[in-house]
Structure formats: structure tokens, C-alpha cells
Length: 450
Image (cartoon, rainbow, N blue to C red; front, side):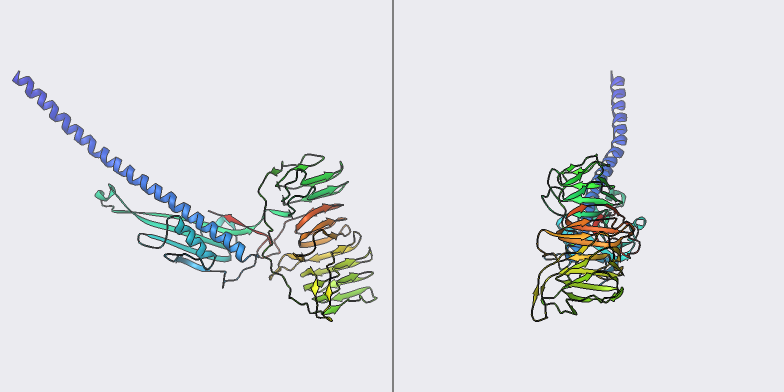
């Protein structure tokens, strides 16, 4: 009996030793898993903070600064190297500070065992997203935290380092046709045998059941993407299928500055076109507008301010051309006898010859026509031209219905239309080759690159 008891005690001792040998690595493994899980949680939190910061900064920048052509200074904060965010931001002084504040609101700031940095650049490739190409403006945020270890500290690793980063940038928008009316039927309409073939997308803000409409079996509408707040009424199904019920978009050019003053100084008053075939015009303020009759008019590069009168061509004998030109169509008080001039639309005859190209640099890079944002509601602008018509640039008329006649914009490298409503009569082609513009499309959108 005693022998049997001794054997039993021996076995129990062996089992205890074996259990101890097994439990030690199990406890260690459990500790490592605990440390790893906690590190993973901090990593996810850091990534959320970095992404929130990058997006918030770029959205604020786009809203505050606008445009598509930037140089470092002022609101355009540039930092070639990683720069620490301030430790505690309550009122951001610029878009970059706003990003730092968003990181702070998500639990990360430059203090103690944490650090948040930013790096920015203009007209360059973000170093953290080298495969994306050059961006007009970009920002990278990094969130870093030293995390105390629980069980790993026993093995000589008292702290672990967690780091996350995110880069956001301004890039050219996918869409190039914007109809901003919130409720119109036929906010984009194609009639009869007319056709619109676009190599870029449409964005239609109207919530109408027939926000996009074709009238007639011959009407054709082609685009790679349709984003519509309401719905479509077309004779033939659109391909690809439209994205309906999307959220409304805001005016994509709302930050484009106005080339205006409270009282317009008239360089020309009711300008009378010389009775000759070839006429050259210079930039300036044309009070009473420009009326082209039987003339071949060449516009020199620059900005043309049309105060009342608009721009009009009369017939097939009206020929207009110009490279690097921008037309701002407005109305109001002038310094000519303190007279006030009413608004007049753009009216380019369907049979006229047109070859107009927007500037490629400067504030109005890519902007060809710019209607006063306070123009009377219900304004109608007409853009015509023969088979070789060129409107290379952006036609921006927030309050107007734009009607395209003839074969307008067929031969342009790019055309962008931002209007209240858009109507197609004839054959029009819209392209999106922005290679002539250093910063790409004048309509920029916020993109999260990583």
C-alpha cells in the first residue's frame, strides 16, 4: 500500500511539472496576444485620426481657397518635411490646423507619448502616393503613439510604436457637365435628333422624376457616368445605368473669384465694330458689350469684361477667334456718366464660326465664359457654331440655361459646362483632355489617396 501511494505521489508531481511547463508558454502567448490586440486597436484609432485629419484639411482648403492654381504662402500652407501639429488647437487658423484639430478630436495630438505631423505640397507628386501622379495640392498626416507593453515588457520590450498615415489631395473631377437647378424637369435635355457625346460624366442636381430628358427617338445622350438626384426620362435606356437618388452637389466653381469692382471703369462704351472684315480687339471692359456682325474678329489674350450687352454674333458672316481669353458677362453701375447697364446674355449664332480657347495659367486657367452669379434668374445663353466650332474651356453660368446649337465644342480638347440647366439642339461633343492645363481640370475634388 505504501509503495502504491509513493507511485501515485510521483505521478502527481510529474503532472504538476508538465502542467507548469505547458502553462508558462501559454501564459506568455496569451500575453503576446493581449499586447498585439491592444496595439492593433491603437493602430486602427491612429489610422482613423490620420484619415479624418487629411480629409478635413483638404475639404476646408477646397472651400476656403478654391481654384486649381496654387503657390505657397498665406492660406496655402507648404511643408516639405514632416511638421508637428500644435499640441492643443481650439480655433484653427487655416485648413492644415483644422486637420490637426480633427486628429485631436479623434484622440491624437502632439503631446506626451503621441505625435501628429503634417506634410504638404503644391503641383507635385505626394511622396507617400507616388503612383497617383501630380496633384495641385496635397497633404499627408501621420499619427504616432508609443504604447506601453504588458507581457512583452518581461521579454525586454517595454513599449511598442504604432504609426499610421493618410494622404488627401485635390484632383480633377470625373464629371464635366453640371446642371445645378434643384427641381427642374429636363435640367439636362436633348431634343429631336440632337446628340451629346461626352467622354466625362454628368451631375444633375434636380430631384425631378425627369431631371434628365430626351425628346424624340433620334435624341442621343452618351457619357461614362450619370449622377442624378432625381430620375431620368429617356426614349432609349442610358448606358451605363444612371446613378439616381444621389446627394446634390454644390456649385463646383463657387470659389472662383469675380473680376469686378463696385463701379466699372469703361475702356469702351457701346463699342461700334469697324465696318471692315478683319478686326482685332484688346482685353478690357466693354460697357454695352460686343456685337459682331459681318466681321472676322480676333480677340487678343486676356480678360474681357462685358458690362451689359453681352457677346453677340449675328450670322454665318460672323467669325470670332481667340487664344487665352476669358469673358466675364455682368451688369451694373459704370463710370460713364454714372449710368447703370442691365444684364444681357451671350448669344452666339448657330451658323457663326467660333474658335475660342481659355487661358492655361493664372486665376482663370481653363475658364472661357463666366456669367455673373447674380444674373437674373431665367437667363438663357446660346452657344452655336458650324462644324468646326471650338469652345475650349469652361462655360460657367450658374443662373442661366445654356443651349448648345450646331456642332459646338466638337473639336475642343476639353469643355466643361456648369449651368442652371442645359439644353442640346444639334450635335455636341464634350472631351476631357486637360493636358494643356498645368493643374488639370479647373474643377477639383477631394480624393483620399491612401
